[in-house]
Image: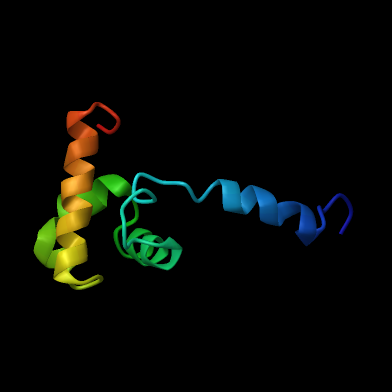
Length: 80
């Protein structure tokens, strides 16, 4: 393939792009974030999902922590 970037050059950029509003929540790591975004598609949809739907993907305690954090981010004006 002409003009294709080597994989080694793509990895650092991919890591930079994984910072989300979920990244700062204790107990929520990269795999959990991936599962949530794969299931719900966006942070806004994670917020709209509610505790019961989130608890199908993560534990109930983690679902509560996620929703509390996201609501705090909205209240602070960091999310819409």
